[in-house]
Length: 504
Image (tube, rainbow, N blue to C red; front, top):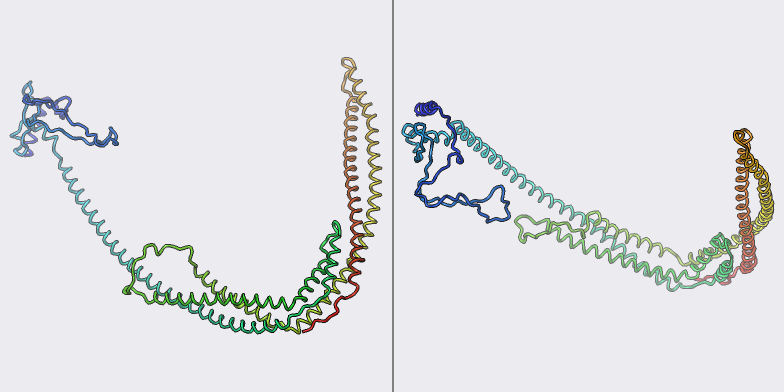
């Protein structure tokens, strides 16, 4: 067969014509005379208007009429065209015409392409099998890893729940112990409250005198309204006198308030203990639960983060805060119970006398300071008045010095103006001209300096006047303060007004 094919190709090349591929434009395929209609070709189907007209389009072909398709080839031995049918290539090249043989050579694959196609199929088969094997191994590995992660997570969750049960039990026991101690302290505090109710008594001390002294001192003016040592001592004395006067009554109120705080702390402890008991029951059930337990089911979204729940640090801190609050309330209650009535009376009397003496000493020191400040203010006022007089004389001298510079300035200006009238080349910028210009500049600088000094002197004069006014006002306030502290308040505090002792 190969030898016949080579003989046919050699015969075609010897005809002197080159084999050219069939071109539908150059060698169209005519229809047989029996065809009634001309073939319209392919028509584009526009079922999808959103697709562009260019590029890929869906087409449909109209069926050809039932006539045999013929093709026309150029015969090397004749000048005309001969219409023949496509030969059957299975019979061999020897039985086919020359033009059919030529068409068969251009419509078949080469052995190289056939071999390449087979090799490509082998390679694709190997790659697909390798990928499938890797994928199966990866799936098995993933299944083993997920099983191990699931078992480890369940064991770890059970262990964590057990630790949580231990922590909850610890805090429940701590809260129960603290609750027992708080209840015992509240019983003792109720006994102390009944004792204080029988001991309620007030004292009338020098409170009125201290208040009158504060009212008189409010009449001070300006800077004398200072929060000085006398006022601090008087305020402390008022506070101490009021505390001593209403000592037992305030103690009773404090005990009642402390009982309310203790009951609030008791409520917090009981609530926390109930919560711990409920949490222990739930965690115990969860700790005993496994994959075969009854009642387990899916709850969609239960694993999502809830920002309203607490975290372990805040949970432990809340219980610790309840315990600390109860301990603090017990400490305050114990401190109140330790206040003995007899000690309270002695401490109150001693404190009243000490504050009275402290206030009198503060008045004495304040009067001495006020008198000394008054004398110093008078001395400073005299010095400021003298300085004002000297500054006023200096201002007059500066004004005179500025006025005295006017005549030399006029002379220098006149000389310069007169020298501008010199004729022709005699109008020269000589040394005399330069010196006159320098003289004018020096005079202007001198006047500027004198005016600057004058402005400073006037500003200083105004500030001195302000200082003098402030010193005068301060002196009047010092005199008024000295009268209030020494005469009015001192007259009220000459005798100790406490005449009755505090009795238990």
